[in-house]
Length: 76
Image (cartoon, rainbow, N blue to C red; front, side, top):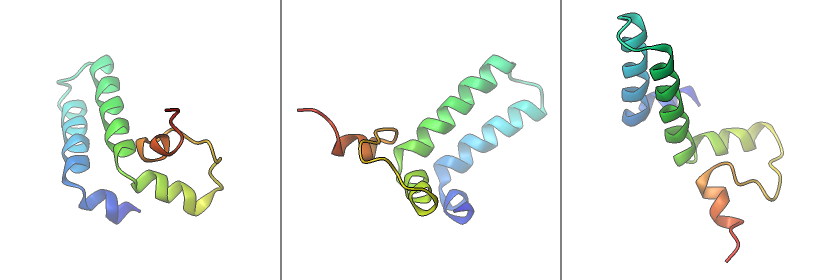
């Protein structure tokens, strides 16, 4: 799982931005929280977290947390 995250250039870029901002005290706690939300969205947009979750726990049939599972359960 960690190797998949490290291989994602978009995830690495967001993490680096957060880390640099915190270390240099260039971002406020509020801005750091917004950046963590951005990271969460990026993680959910792919299937990495969803696949990892499925490998450890049973995922409810109607799970709609990640976009890939939400599409399967959308009402049309």
